[in-house]
Length: 299
Image (tube, rainbow, N blue to C red):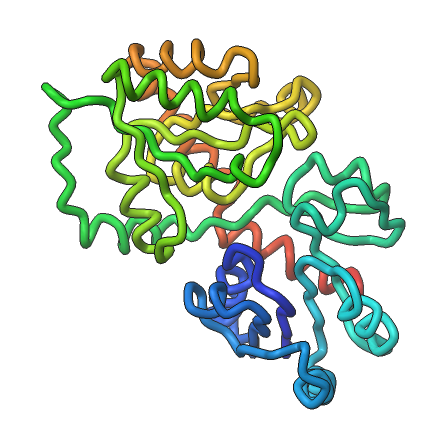
């Protein structure tokens, strides 16, 4: 098949495309963001330019499949007018669907989004476990001895974009000042350095957002590297999917993180369970197989 991935949220399209090429498909990834392009590659397109838009739509005519990630705005409207005789698959990743509604068949990257799409299907975020471990371990110079060093905690400060997240900042400051841990803030660095930073740590802090209730690629990469993850998972989603996450809330975050810092055996158990979970449900091989089945269903 000739497949076009349109957009590349968190490099997910690139991960799927690489696996699809292994099976003989001709695949391209069209990218609209320079940072994403520098991190994960693809065909850079300036959608704001009228000529670039015309060139994009002309090029897309060559493909049998349009796999559209983060469908939103004027590009979504334009593609929906032009998708006749194409396998057209919308793949939502968060803010493009959360709080909105889509009655069509589509894919969603986190199960909390299913409430906004009655005909949607959850596609687990693909993780290329072999590539992550090869890239990280081949360049790893981290001192693995844990005697006489603080517990290192990796976190991506997504919360700085959200109001009412002082609980997060204050907890990390208090624990750092008490010398109970070392905080490793991961922000605006190349993806390989993100993986290396995660691998150098003992705990990964995930999202603690009650309006979401699930976790994303950052947390899954931590799990793939055998790190315990502390995050908020809603009761409903936890009961249905049982991810091996150390669950917390905004109110209990500081106390829960302290417990995890002090419990080495629990960290080791969660790290092993998380790695097994990613291998079972999120491997790029199994996820890509599901994607191909959906293409066939829509054909």
